[in-house]
Length: 476
Image 1 (cartoon, rainbow, N blue to C red):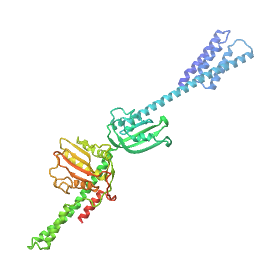
Image 2: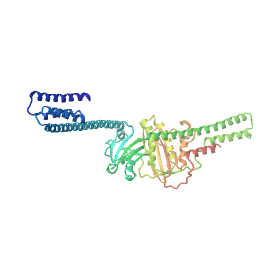
Image 3: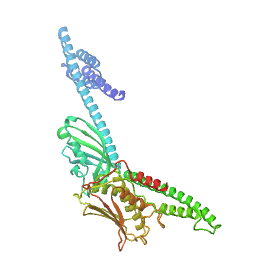
Image 4: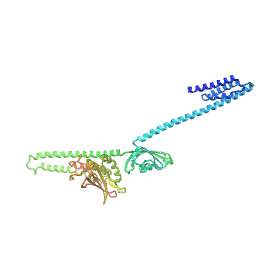
């Protein structure tokens, strides 16, 4: 600041010196007083107000020294008038310069704020575009006015999302915008089903807020696809059921080993006894063999019924697609289950039916893994008083079906209880699981009752608890 003040101050002093030199050297018979205003105006750009007044007094005094002869009163009056004129011009220049500086400072501040705003907007844009979550802004009309790249990818929209109705993708947001304005600011989270551009549904977690009023009312939302979480949760439940199968198999195997040990002891005793028919050990042996036979052919059908509710197969279709869809995509396979929107609901144990379908799907997945054609198809038909789900795949099929639904069947993966437990689950809510011979692949049919049928149910039982109870009762 001092570096810029010095040249201006030197220029003012030099101008005063030049005027004084001209007055002294040429001895004009007129005054150059009007020119003394120039150094005051120049000095006013760098001096303070009181300094400007002092400079004006100095210039007025200097002007009076070289003024032609005049009376004392005239000299005083001219001095006062020159001081007032010089001070007024200097203060005017000071005010103009101060205003200019204020405007420049305000302009610089605006430019700086604009740069910060642009930088923040750029950072927000990069954050939104790089975010794996879909970010949407919806106007009061229900039209999407902003969407990031993740939203385009998640909703699988070939056309730009901007300008499209949000109800086509997330009806929850459109319903939220229609809430009364008297509610005020809304900021909440929710889980709902969203829809892609091709019509497929997927579970989503949402966080959204509504701001503004009237035409300026907008909704800002974050949408996250939770298909993987749902799939992992259901697969964990499926693995839990499979672990229960292994526990059941271990318990039954333990009892079989005990019976076999007893048979070995009795057989050893019989080797030393010639009167076999009437021997008590032989009678005991027959009883043990009968017990072993009963245990090996144990029927796990429930003594009681499970709790049944009305279930829309359309919803169950989307849930099953979320759970197993990725597994079939990983092997370049196809999963097809299309249900008409007006198909009637069924009365089943939702979790039991889902677990049975998961079991059949896993069996089909292993069967078609090395096939040229990999597909799982579920056809839904309404036959008489039953709803039939026909589950078929393109695998090599089943060579022998003699022991298909028996526990511990030879050649089965794991404990060999998968189909056995699945049939027990279906039977628990009044359904039936049966094998359908086909020329190619493998096919099972699940016959269940529609929701309009009158069913007697026991709401206190569950598939797993009834199976374990049946096994425990039979082993006892």
